[in-house]
Length: 51
Image 1 (cartoon, rainbow, N blue to C red):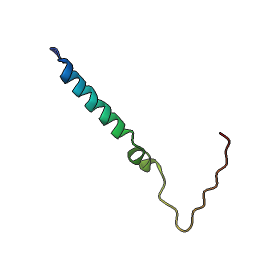
Image 2 (cartoon, rainbow, N blue to C red):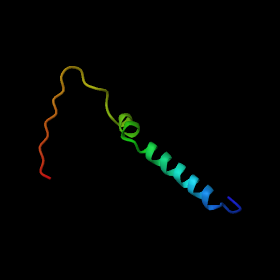
Image 3 (cartoon, rainbow, N blue to C red):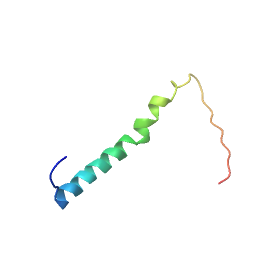
Image 4 (cartoon, rainbow, N blue to C red):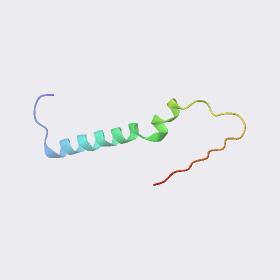
């Protein structure tokens, strides 16, 4: 990229880039493609932990 960018254009560009990055990192976009198909029948999830 050559030339200069004024402050308003730079800010708008950075805001658009930020929103694009947040949208790309949304769990509803990232997670499903890494999960197996849902099992048939009932699914029980048991969790225990200590914060």
